Length: 148
Length: 149
Image (cartoon, rainbow over all chains, first blue to last red; front, side):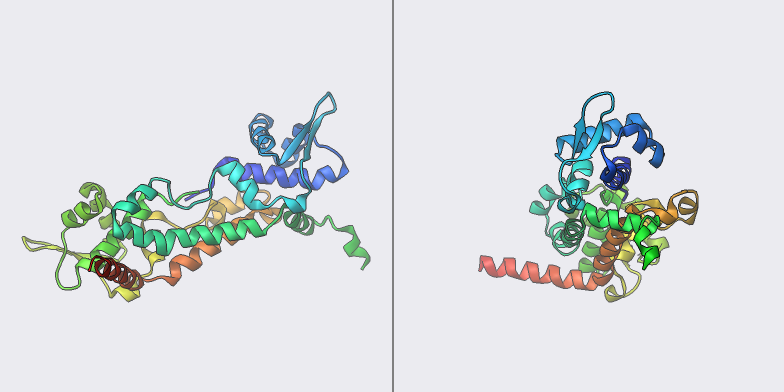
């Protein structure tokens, strides 16, 4: 049971964009360099994120990307669903099986759908702004702390 | 991020076995027929479940499978992990080799979220036993019968 590379790298790149675009839009090559992810790969990921309305592109030679909405309005749920598809722990195929078999339904109702509910509640409660705050804490990017 | 068919089928088969083997042994063929799954595939899963002390087999003409310990002593998590490994969305949460080879291990924010997700999954699967599932299943059956009467 693993997240896809798209989910992992996409979220990492998006957190990077959220942190550094506070200073202005960021080119994919800057993000790629800081995060050690191939720029070509990031192009695919950002095309997905742009279609989902999560980032917007600034065209031109000095172009790049910005968040399309404030970081506090972008939940992890929305971002991960854009990158990974639905966040259900079981394949869609199970939906047809539960109609035909009570054992399969019983496990679905008592295990898989409960996990789905918990995971969705968790990712919908965390915003990109929360992740940016953690990023700054972990990477000692909170200069004001030294003055307290 | 999905549970593989291994984890899903193993848990379904163990519940079916627990429900049908309270008095006598149960054959894999019956379990496979009821769940509409391949017997060969279930056989491979049952080898792993046997090695993990979840089911035991009795050989012979009247042979078959039963749980290796009481249903209330087996959690759903134990069954799923036996065939699926740890239930984590990223390898660095369990493998120190993966974690150490990652230069951003100490400053990785995403990892906090992945850890939170993994904890939620663990809480669900470790709080439900096979006995709980058998009781739920029995209640479900009763309701269906009452509905028809």
